[in-house]
Length: 117
Image (cartoon, rainbow, N blue to C red; front, side, top):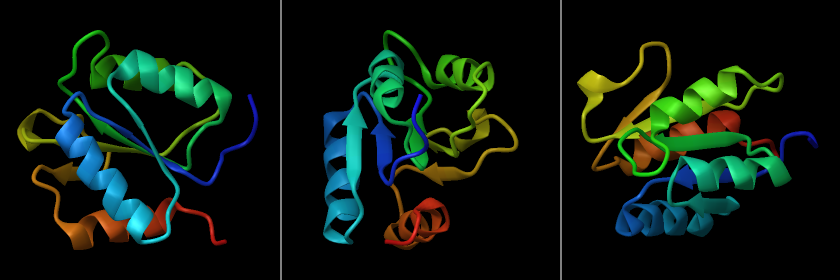
């Protein structure tokens, strides 16, 4: 697998949530990609790992917890932030963005992980 790329991967089964977050990030000059579920996210990351993964927990096919387990089994770490409407269910130790996402929190988090251009 190649080194981390300069993009944020937004993984959520809700197309509206993905569209809004991706649009915000792109309007701020970040490269953003999207995936509908965990399986699609892992396929995208095989091509080029992101600098940050914004990961919903509740998704069909492969949920966020399964993606986290898969990533922990891999040698190269990817920064993960949980994106959820149920913060009490989020795994401990990972950054968290509650839905609806606050713009300032989103941009602050992304700026910490996105490499300078």
